[in-house]
Amino acid sequence: MAQRTARKPGKNDYTVIDLETTGLHAATDSIVEYGAVRVRDGQPTEEFSALVHLQTPLPAEITQLTGITQSELEGGMDAAAALEAFLEFVGKDALVGYNLQFDLEFLRAACTRNQKPILTNRKIDLLPLARRKVIGVANFKLLTLVRHLGWQTGWSTGPADCRLTQRLY
Image (tube, one colour):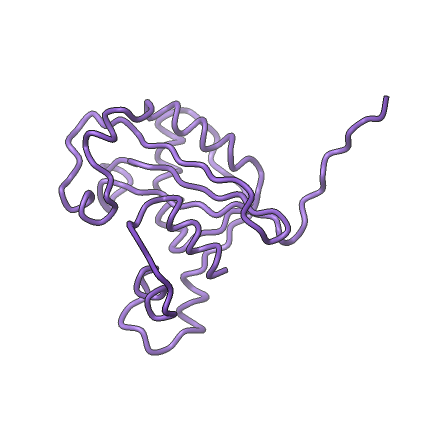
């Protein structure tokens, strides 16, 4: 019987991640959605999305931004289970994100709270690259940049932002 050998990751293999949160502060705010898109040979192959059941009400401005509602979160996963599933999905892949440092702060806080190891994956943040390469935009928010490029957008959710970030990358 032939043994199956593990596929060695190439330079075009990575996972794009994006988190939706209740606010801007990892110490006091919560993750409401984990989003990720696995990319192999430069092509998206699999998506991950996990809504997180909150113990507190979802701020109205987050619903306006993301389209995620309180009732959707009521059917979401327990925070620890969502984190575990997300960590399993991203594995050891290089992580690509837009303003990735923001998401990594929330991930570090979630890992610490749940006694999980902090991710040591290779990380590629597209925000600093955009600041160096793109001119003529009012700000460097992902949706501003995407509109500047003439791309269509919908709600700012984890998987949708991952698809936009992958396209941008």
